[in-house]
Length: 251
Image 1 (spheres, rainbow, N blue to C red):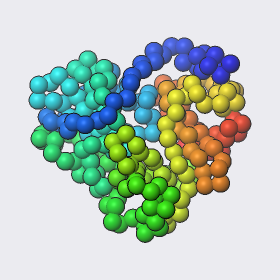
Image 2 (spheres, helix red, strand yellow):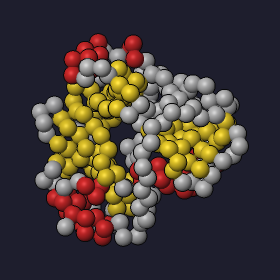
Image 3 (cartoon, rainbow, N blue to C red):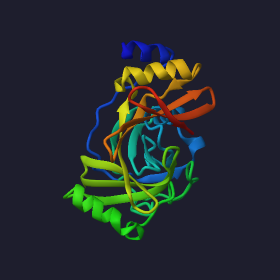
């Protein structure tokens, strides 16, 4: 039933599927602006990474490949036609402050946030001490890869912390500004969220369509929340819902 409801919401869209592969290469080439980036790439990012924005786009020296680095420090590689050829969750080109490593190119226009400090990057050694303590105590073997500020309607200002142990193992943790743990977050296909949530979208947000992917938050007390990314033409809305479809907040 929930897939039928979602199919109705997305009847005018074509869903592109891809297989995740481990990101092991470093992009080389020239940094280009958003306006120079193929529209197919921009569409893919907006539908599949709705919680992130493009920080940098690098076009390979041969012109046959584009590497997109998001403000969540994730990297996606595309061919010249905008098809995904590789994607990973680590943001191979960014350090903890958002600086880029060894891309071999020049700065050509930034992105939504511009330059090399996407999303309010925070140096790892500047984070509240209790964040490192939480990671070491609850995720042994993991290290903090990067962190940045964000604003969520149910929490206010937060610190998003990406941790990893290998290129294939990663987590996004959300803390308040003082370093108190709030939630574990990860992306999910909108097709797979509860039917009650999809029904609530249909009932309460007429004319809006959800992006292909949403974000599931597991709070400290075990409560599950879903961040749903809606759009209606150029209007965008982020709605947070409980599993039963109750609206928590909007932004």
